[in-house]
Image (cartoon, rainbow, N blue to C red; front, top):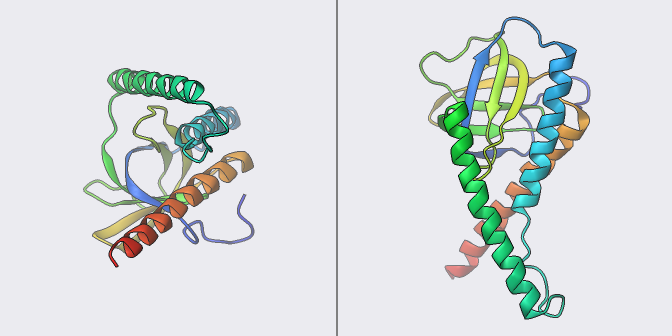
Length: 193
């Protein structure tokens, strides 16, 4: 968990358009609800991390051609199943609208729009961090206000009751995305000249 009075909106963040919904709830969440959300969030982030792992780094000597081909076929089948499950899940739960989001380990920001919640509003954010995996994070917290940003104001939401394991997994997710962005920018810079 964050130390002292550190702001959740500092350091690295995952910045992209993601499916998100905010649901106000004036009552603080019950400890059982926080614990249930924490377990589900941790499992979701573990699955997301495993889906994002790349096996391209394996040396040809590590896997023979037949085993590599078998793994690729299995991965393809899993990808198809995930897409099907994602479609079914969004039908049953309703699709979330995508919007620009900046996700930090202790909070998040989303681009404000009509009907954005006021500072001090308690509630829960449902956030889908991987478009190919329909499971959503359930993040309880409080709206801390708005901040000027690219494209207009951004709503700031401070997490409450998020356990250390989930914070650690969010930090890993954010770091992996940052590392990919740096590698992509490096690749574009060297490709051009």
